[in-house]
Length: 264
Image 1 (tube, rainbow, N blue to C red):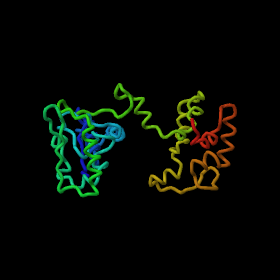
Image 2 (spheres, helix red, strand yellow):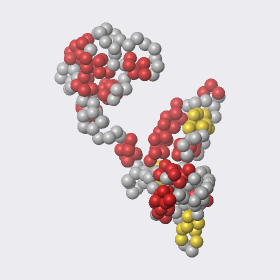
Image 3 (cartoon, rainbow, N blue to C red):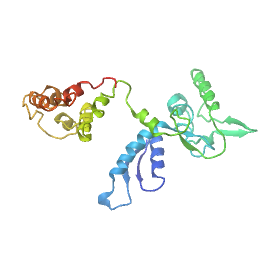
Image 4 (cartoon, rainbow, N blue to C red):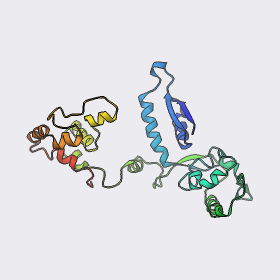
């Protein structure tokens, strides 16, 4: 794995980030063309995290194979060839080869010219047969430009909805979102409850996980450490205050937090 730093702001910066992530490189910095004291931009950091997750759902649609890595790009099947056939990747002569280095076109047909450091052993023949069968089932054209394609199920290409569905947790772990967002509560209140249900509010236990040095005790009841479950469900002082304020306004915070994991 190579460690790289990218200069963002150019028209190809997003594409370069995706390629680096797909090749298994670690992007350690995203620097704008700005003064040194403002070299990393929050937007770039957010864009990197977004692109990092987006890259998982992209594959390369093969053209002439001049921009696609044979072993390390996802272009044939559902994973990288080096991950699907690690025993063959170990004996590959050129592990950074492009697809065009191995594919040959003759009389309208496609032929694969593979180059290994030694002949396959008897116990590797089954993997070789599966490997060759997969290669010949690919959509190698021999012309046009390699391009990125969406791995979703939509026939219309990339859609925000399909990407959103990919990012959602598995069914049954979304929390009681209808009881939070569909109650008519002010947006800030709904957002706080949603963050609490996801375990993301900055209680002392969460702060300590972020290496913030702070005494772990509840400042309201002074009887226990402050966690989300304690503060919103078990703290006697907080419970008394909640019960006095939520009458007639739907379920209390401790009810909503206790429903995390309930199927929406």
